[in-house]
Length: 207
Image 1 (cartoon, helix red, strand yellow):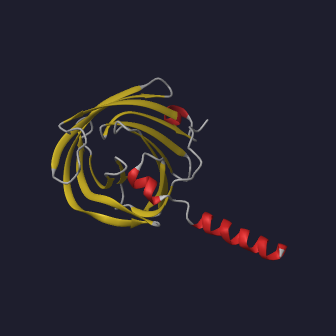
Image 2: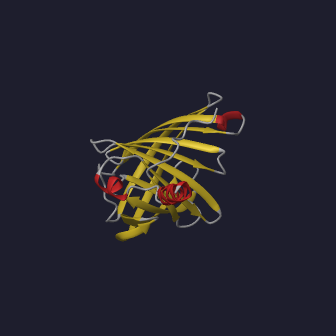
Image 3: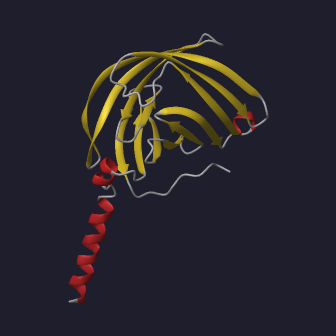
């Protein structure tokens, strides 16, 4: 009898471990959510913390865990950011403030939009940088997609960017999740979703 009880417990534990995402909570509440994704050969993890007002705090870990970033979004618009890393020198950490021009609050990403972002960054060594980047966003598609065991609304788009200070241009891909009020950005390729969880260990800055 004890053997069967142990076997049943093991099966229940395995089932719980295999389903770490509460899909109903993700869609209908403000439960914290962790997304795992990759672009090309680079794997990243994003954690999203929502509140009732529609604001969001997003944590991102990438570069094999050597870089951690935290962003605060108000009405879906990035306002402040912090980074920490395993690197020495000015890039050990940074703080930033962002001013968006031309992007409406709670922009649903379902239409083309031209806007700009002015960033004011302070690095670990006290040096600063301020620049404005112009974005030309193009809406590509919207629908429901499977993410792990869950089905989420996903809006896909692409952006061409130019930095007014350096003249550098670049292209990026975005996956926006209206239910999370957060987006994944791919700098080298369109991101591929790997997993979603509602049970996870919260990220912290790199000391």
